[in-house]
Length: 132
Image (tube, rainbow, N blue to C red):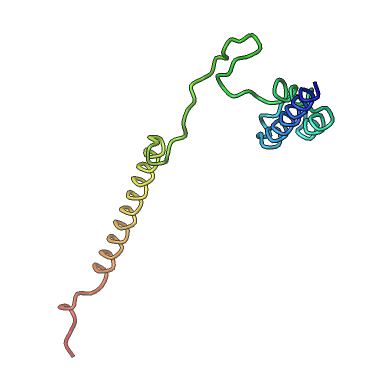
């Protein structure tokens, strides 16, 4: 009988340690019902009940796990983040930005060319100068 008590005590300790690790490593958005520090205190002061409460109520369950009734929760398909070179919106924005920059550069070159042509037209021709 003593061995059973020791085994149950060890199971309770392991459950409390796992619950503490889970509580402390969970994202702040996934901690439900109470603040994280309150959950830590509940798990420390009431190891068995606090650990079970943490796993049932205190954290958001991973997507697709069964609820209390045993039926799986409906989940939206997870959308993987795309790398920039795979994201069509990002590539389109790069293309548009490049097109705008090219148009601006061309406009500046044309302005510079017109300005230089005007300077050349305004300058007297070398042939019209009297020789000294």
